[in-house]
Image 1 (cartoon, rainbow, N blue to C red):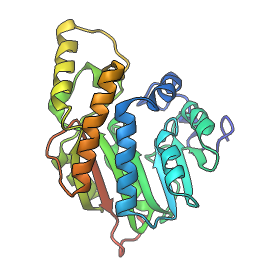
Image 2 (image 1 turned 120 degrees about the vertical axis):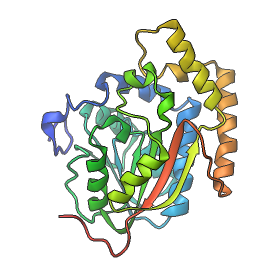
Image 3 (image 1 turned 30 degrees about the vertical axis):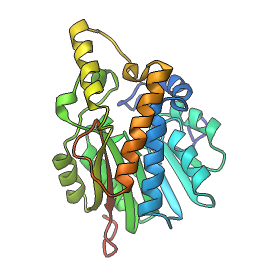
Image 4 (image 1 turned 90 degrees about the vertical axis):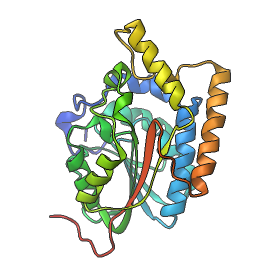
Length: 271
């Protein structure tokens, strides 16, 4: 146990890297009102209901402040929900939001479960981890045969900027690269689509302004600190995207990507 949480990698609970642990408190206060987090949650909940509606057990890797798990627990009741985070500072924030979710401190590169979960989610997590291929292999091992993985990641390498560096990103993905890594890990891709497509011009302008102003330090959230009317407008645009995705349209470009993968039913956990 570390700070009251079951721990599988205690040596990393405060210095695991890939994120700034003192940022969790501000993030928790920010998520409920921000268009991007709210829209991403709606997309995740839809994808979970569409591609893994009958799941009984769900693990979120890198659950952070518990914002996504809070939405899942309200929408999908009577399910076994688990959240893991390398930093106990994040788990402390998540515990304030979640009452029926089992939380644990864990390194996603060494998941201590085999054939255990119906569904595993990693939402804007693996871009923080250098060994992302090992994480995907570990997820495959932890899923039951026939289990589903849901992933969201930042997309397009040409969008890389100081904002990514300050957010502790290791990379932004191309769809080709991530598809290949998932397939190597043993997954069959069920669905892959961009989102934050209609806001791509705004993202490009924002990053160009950061470069021109030679901003020396951001915290990775500066792009989301916008006026209330812009927050409402951007949220409405992302609602349109979600509607298109629900219709079965895969958006080719966008600041982020959602991928749903299947561990084939005949697959067995890796040893």
